[in-house]
Length: 307
Image 1 (cartoon, rainbow, N blue to C red):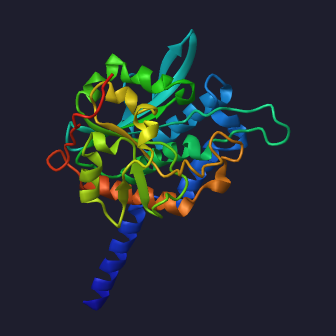
Image 2: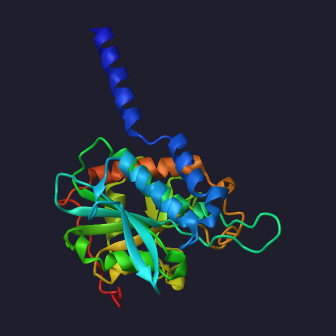
């Protein structure tokens, strides 16, 4: 009997461990996106397109379905130039969706001597790695909510990709059932509150953070926006969905008062805390796993501006 109990415990431990996303995988994804070979992933460059193809490959590995058409790549044009967003879905037990997003473009290279590559490890390879990590966590699961994963392009040029995909009528079936969008923007470092914590932009505009914190596991904590005066809520990709009156906030760990790496060549993997990122990805995923359309239905307050 003791032997059977021991084997059952070992099997349970193996299954529990297998559910989690490994630090090695997190490091591999982020390091690839922020590599010198990607040359800063500036929109309308071959390297930017390579990044889109790489993300599409990871979506396929995580058994995501196409959002529309026959590809994860969703083209859009701006001033006659074509680029791609990347979109995949995971069907859950409900037709209601939760969205997870980030932007994969960055600012490319500079004319400086020496290291002139703006690798964009934190901004925003970290956000893309987070949403892919969540997809990986749910790879062999059937969550209560269905899920849509969107990697936006052209954020650095004025939120081009998120605006384009938010207006794509082919995705209206998803958007009409989208309960909330979690947009990850610069989550590579430990926040000012310590490990396993993030902050939510525009926290006073909805009760999303309160509902997540109520269900949070393993000490994960969403803190209020410390930069409310900077209006970051209206300056990141989430705002493209706010305009559609969809609950959409950005989540970050970056301390903007100390972020010397922001839009700088030293925004590379050396500034990334992979232990903290992995912890956040797994605990966020486990928290999401507890949510369902009955216990999670966030609402905007009357303070938000939709236009």
